[in-house]
Image (tube, rainbow, N blue to C red; front, top):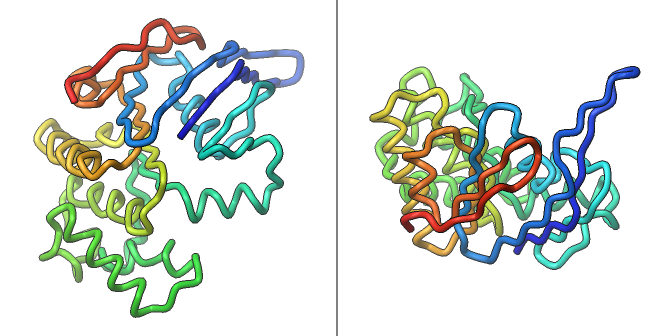
Length: 226
């Protein structure tokens, strides 16, 4: 599903140059749940942003679903992000004036589906993660864990080929963090490919594989408990 070859990323700020990723090679198979861990500044989120087409590598190649992404133009990359990927971030990114169902419906409507079909998909996604009773609730009426689960429902409602998650439990207490990880585990049981950045070793162990970064390089690639 994902193949990375000699991935290199640097940031230039005037005369200052920061190298974040140093010629990485990585393969992720369809249906795998991969956790990316490492110390602060290791390049975890930068790697996720390259894989998910939210940023562009300085050099190297990324293939996603057998597509060589360096050959895509910006319109094609946007279409791939919208139609084939799901994203979960640590800050939930829910619109406060919309209900849980309406938040989940947004990206589906952006794909061009009608309101009725978008509503059906949104309610089904919320049901998959145990939020059937919260469909009409506003974000302010939900706990942090519930808000993050709504963002997960939004990410999976259109059946993405890859679900990307960047520190999805960072703003949660341990109880809500476990609830969110339970949701990821259940989604993975349905053969969903997941790539997750986390700083929590306890949660990383629940993945299929644990990839450790340090100073922009992969230092280990081990099996998790999945």
